[in-house]
Length: 617
Image (cartoon, rainbow, N blue to C red; front, top):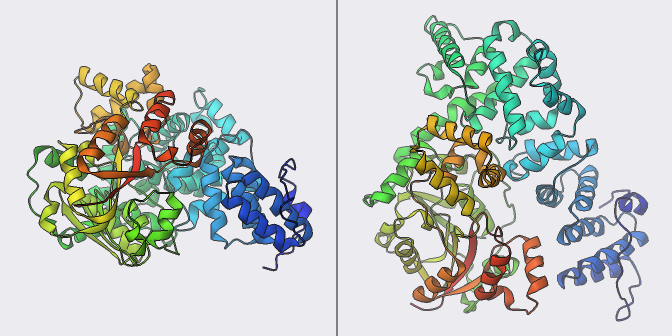
């Protein structure tokens, strides 16, 4: 590359206190130092690698690849803020260098910002607005911490409970509209922050009752668009009082009369209604049009829903779903497809199975699968398609079959897949218990977060194992008994309160949690699943939930004759584990992980995610 950047400029954000030993190797030029850095990095000697790459830059100031590798190695040693600065600088040099966005996103997701960083704004906006760079929900919490460092935002949050807040609403909305990070984040993913939720709930109500006075202001319209999308993505989770409900009915009636009369309603009125109700639910929804500036929001609020309905008949059904628990779980996801998503990092360079296995650091007991160049993959419980698309674009020359109980979830997945132009995924409505009717074997099976919602998880796991070829790999996700004790407490509470799972009861319980704030509630609020209705229902109101211990997993693997190949874990967790268990194969010893989890009880707060291999029939 011909980027003219000085070594001093590139290195000014990086600490200089890294050392390495070159007694065994004497680099002579920038390329030698670069290759030394690559070698050291492969050996997990990340700090030494950083120093080698810095030496390469000193000799060749525009050595772009060396600078990028400094950022990668800073990430690997947990220096996330330093890494962010490196990747941000790289993007400012070459805005089309996709790997920098990948590492910028994962580095941002690791931390919390304590001060404003205006120089990061453009790069983060690209992550949020350019298609298929990242899943916005993974960086939402960290980006919100950055948004909250803005002085205008600090002032607004401090003033939201003042008596004159309503009188200053135009200035408040104008200031919020000027916060580009906030507006763009609102358009793509639920905001993971209770104070911001309280602020937006208040503003939504003020706008509803004063829309005729506010509707002609462009800053109000731009903000309303973002708020409408935010409420759509969090599935109208914000509470409303009876006065608001009555006012919404009046607004509904006015808009309907306008449509019947052949008039297109004012777009501000449509957006105001869309902050309270899904527009596609009205009979007139397909008759209204938005101006050219707002075509995308019309697609999201109206067109996508009807496109998915058109896809229902195109999705085949494998047998009848007769199991009672399966039937109830299907009903839950018909009502609340999970998860809704609006962005995903698409891999443009799929890898062979061999490379994926190496990247995942899996221990195999039969290497034949590495030779497979055209893998057949089964996704058992694909939900709304995010996992399917990720897998289909990761495995080179793969053929993916994705099944799920919910037809509505599958239609959502198929629409997203078609929009992305991905053609190696087939979707099918099916219960795992019926998979034997396929009479097909797969090289890879992925089942993350499904078995623990079945009536008999072991029965489902056995069916999946029987769908696997000898030597094939299966990825399993299971809830941890130890890590989910706060969920256990919450589910007990829901039962004692006699709550069902209708929307009003879910919203009311959520409000109850934020007011009472017991220790287990605080853990609940930390979860990103607390901030949209489908995810919250899945988290604590699910029809069926089992939890497991690592000792149970050891027992199940023995009964199924499957071999443990390794956990899917964060690099930071792996570093901590290896600081306590230093032997090479310790990370493939489930008994050691059992001990480790007991001393780190929230380690698997999401779930256990691990690979195992079928070594014989």
